[in-house]
Image (tube, rainbow, N blue to C red; front, side):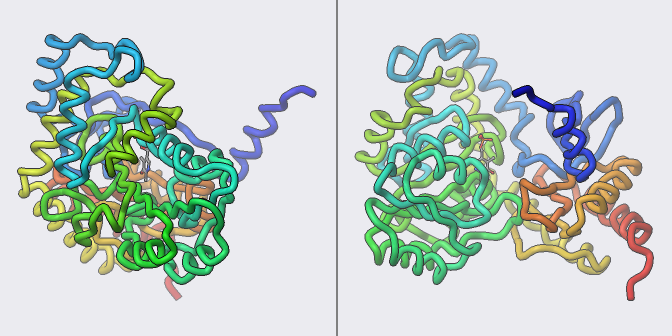
Length: 390
Ligand SMILES: *Cc1c(COP(=O)(O)O)cnc(C)c1O
């Protein structure tokens, strides 16, 4: 009847799956101090370099002076303040949807949207590689839960045939551990043909993708009719914190009534919404950030291919290097760290068994010279990790 936590931890260690938290002793950015050491980092999701931007910081400070620091209550009680409301209106306009609803974070937005929309007697169909928050949400909803093959519209179509009740199809926009894009036009076609709804979590697409940073929906030119439930998070390219769901009037009103992670939590600090309003403005208008980022992505892919590294089918800032074995992924990550570079090894269960990888992420805050440093170090470390190429 007791808990043998030490035994469980020992197994975790033996499997090379033990997690540790690097201690960040500097602001977020390419050059960080971690566990007392200065490092050049390629692992945050601050794709446009806004997390430590002086104008965003200033907006937060002014917001705190004007509105205080705490939300103070849930939105439905007395925590829904003017900056929250203004941010929702700006996000609705940005996404081209009638309305948007602000959540405390992406995990809660996904949990709230899925559980508010489907329940017992309904069906939720998800891509196998969806973010954990979407999978958890599907399981918690009580709806019949089924996963289709990664990014495979015909696999989805087969499952749609057998679906009953209200049916929600859920996918990442940009897959967070692979960097590839969901084939939204095909998924939307199948979904609409069956009268189901498509929900897209575009946590990694907003900012880097689309001519104005409007994400995968803008990239493919899809409407609210194709993607009725559009989720974005604010802790990645926006550089702040929080998340939103954008969609129709009825959708947003339903979430306000029924999404428990929206209802039963304190609103985020209003000053944070002030900061996000500023970062939204920078994200939309400073096109040079996307252009510079795309140049770095191309530079990285060219260099990595020359080294012979196995990249994935991605043109986004997420550029994983496939390794396979967890132990080898950790060793490569450690070698890079000894050379002053921080690139995280991602292991199961975050990714499927046997597909450990180094998750390189690029940011508009990086320079070409820094990407070259990474490539040079990868070249050296990769050679010593695997000396014999048959
Ligand atoms: C990061 C992420 C989330 C969670 O968002 P938070 O705001 O960090 O809670 C949800 N979905 C995807 C695809 C993500 O990458």
